[in-house]
Length: 405
Ligand SMILES: Cc1ncc(COP(=O)(O)O)c(C=O)c1O
Image (cartoon, rainbow, N blue to C red):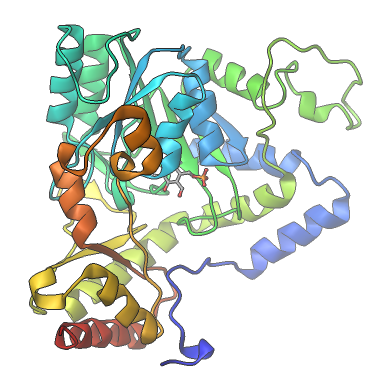
């Protein structure tokens, strides 16, 4: 058993003096809600990601919700999402009484299987049954691919699919700040194929604001709508109403939400963003060291790095062979006893009680995701993970192998 000082947490934010200085400046300024830091964060993030418009929000979940609202999702419409994802990707469709249609994963990069997505769209349009899709629905309306762990899904295929069938493409880029993918000979920012791309700055993300998110788009109408809906559906720039240049007068144009990003969070974000590429490189180095330390251990499958993607290395997910290591739960407990935090990304949506009860799913409806889930463990990865600690993780993994009874 390790002492608390020796504990290797699953994630660790990288907060520097600049972030602390900016938050202090924000606190001293007396303006804590959305203000100049949020506006600067939006401008800088839009430039960094190569989009025309950015809307800073209090979570990626809010960004996904507003994105679906902006593209006009309606009750009974269908939204394709991978089953191997976090709750947020699919729950936002339910906010509209729309129907999330689950899609299995690729066995190599764990992203949404785009060939299956295409087959599902075609089956639905042909009126053929698809598991989880009720007989009465209002047709497919959007796809939300997730760039699992920081490696982009096949977004070029997804874009083509959306264009062919007139679907909105909202990308869940929660793991991608930054990640890139190859389009012919050109590296493009993850999210750049989307109608609206949604990023997360939750505490464990590559860059963080504690809680926070951003919706990016080149479409001015979508941007305006998301901005208005992020603040109670009240008229543009309502966030300014208590400032020098603001006015008390506002008009409600739609029943909106309260999703704006406070300046205390944005003050962290503007500084994190400056180091986003540096953090990514540091994570890539940690991933390389983890791979070097773990390779050769029998019964492990290590994460693959595709040639057409620059990985954000948000997650480092290994697959364990239970014949070699014993049950996955025991493996996690063993690492925990050695003072190593781990996680599992994810229990697939179709295996959660809500989705089982609502749509009648069974585990083997999505056999790839089910099989990945049973074997996967996310190991710690962050820029400050030292070589010494990486060696400790590898030693613990090795001894977990020996611990099989
Ligand atoms: C794939 C994915 N999508 C969406 C989210 C939601 O992000 P947020 O916590 O910023 O709402 C997360 C958060 O962990 C995530 O991992």
